[in-house]
Every structure is written in structure tokens, then in C-alpha cells.
Length: 354
Image 1 (cartoon, helix red, strand yellow):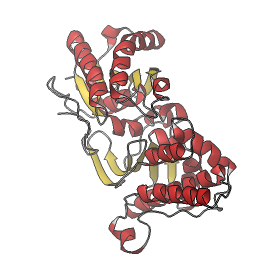
Image 2: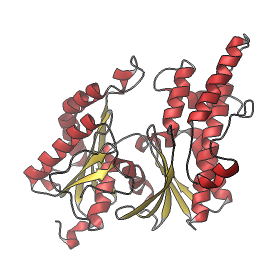
Image 3: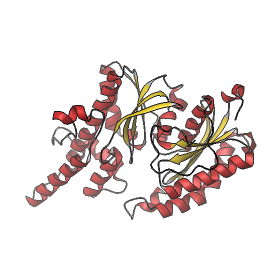
Image 4: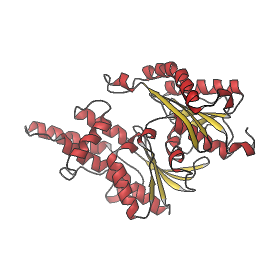
């Protein structure tokens, strides 16, 4: 374990390999020294989705070159590293295994502690590298292809409580599925967002899941997007049966508005309910233009600050893992043992592997 006096300025190496990005970054305290990412995304366009075996092999091929470039960019030596942080979950088991094995090997050879960190919480921790120290207490909105969750964060290294999450599809997943339904290239999310900006968001009124009747209170902080996706499918099929023209831009705009209305309304409500003055947003879907616009607008009206990292930190990256590892080190959290394994369903209340 690092000495207490050394914790503040510990040099942490972060390794990300939860899905198709191989990320390596170095963070000292709250300062990012280097962040490098290799992706295998282009290989999945013809399949319309991630192929786990291909992703795992890509991590094996990309890790060492990515590590070398990150070390060169940071200007530090591998021997300078004080701790290794590696994504332990959630994610694809095969991909996680590659990163974990690399992290354990490096930590063992360097004689430094290793932390198996929560990849999802890293999406929030990375904000410190951009906007400075995280608030003492905040609402975390994590939105990605696999997660749509609201978290009450009292300390991201020691005290995180899940308030709610999606009961079915995540926001990013729903966007990709609607993109496929409309015949847009993979991944569909960015294309749906682009078309939504060109369409009329008032032209088609799609339903908001869990927003009325008893569901509104029973599922106060939860989301549901599968019914919305079905509504879009039925709308398109009805138009086709009647031989009527279909405006993809208007469909995307109406769909995007429904998703983002739900996400932003519940995030602001959670902040008000818990007397929190800041919402921190993270995850791939936080790149969505309407989410940023609508959340900023609603939060401002309620006197709440919104912190969203730049788009480069929205998708999976090593910086988020290094940032989360740095938080754990600075808070004096005990490192993981070398016996930990990947956890594809790692709880959002679990900051790091024991």
C-alpha cells in the first residue's frame, strides 16, 4: 500500500478493455499526463454489432503498442508507476480478461498495487480531469449503450448508491436499434442524433416510458425505452402499409426528444429530491447533442450545475479508469488482490474489486 504522504501525487496507470476500445492512460493526482485509445469498431460494421471474439483478439494485438505510445506521450517511465488500475467490469468477459491479465502482470512486475475498478463509475470520475475536483456530493447520470442509471454519489471512491436505472434497453442501445430500423449505418446512435437535429421534434409525439399514473412514482428514477422503440417501429410500418412518405429526420427528432425528455427530467428530479446542486454526466450517449442542450436548460432553471466531459471522454477510454484508480488511491482504499476475476455484471455500488 502506498504511504499516506504519497497518495496525493501517485502516478496511476489506467487500462480499459471492457468492449472494443483498448485504452491506456496515465494520471498523477487529478492531472492527465497521457491518454491513448485503439479501437476495433470499424470491424463490426458488416455485422451490425460487436463480436466478442474479435474484440478480445484486438485487445491482445493493441495493448502493448498503445501502452508504449502512452508512456512516450506522458514522458514517464513504466518504473515510475505507483499503482495500476484496470477495468474489472461491467463489460465483455473476454475483453475484460485481456486487460485484467495485463494489469496484474504489470503490477506484479513493478511491485505496485493493482485496483480492479468499476468501468461505469469511471465515466463519472473522468470529469475531474477536465473540470477539476468532483463535488462532495452529486447526482451521476450514466448513459451509454449498456447503461442508463441515476446514482447518488457522496464519494466516488467510497460511497455510491444507485437510485434507479433502465428496466430494459439503455438509451444508447435504443438509439442504435432505431438506427437499424431506419436503415442507418452502424453504429446508429450518431446518425440518429444527426438526423434529429434536422427534423421537427414536435411533428411526432412518441410515448415517454414510466411517466404517468402509478408508474411515475413507483419508478421515480427508472427508465424504459423498449416501448418507445416499439412505437417507432409501429409508426414506420403503418406509414409503409399506407404507402405514405416517411421523414426519417422527424422520426429521429421525435424519438430523440422522448428519450432525452425522460433522462433529463428524472436527473433533475433526483437532484432536487436529494438537495444536490450538481449533476455529472458520463458515458457514450452523453455525446448526444439534445441531451446536453435539454439537461443544461432544465438544470439551469432549477439552479443546478451540469458537468459533462468533452466528447473525447464520452466513449470508453483509459483516462476514466486511471481517474477512478487515482480516486481510490487518494481516498486510501485498499487495493484488490491478485485473485480477482472479471465481473460482467459488476454492481454500480461496487467501486473496486476487494
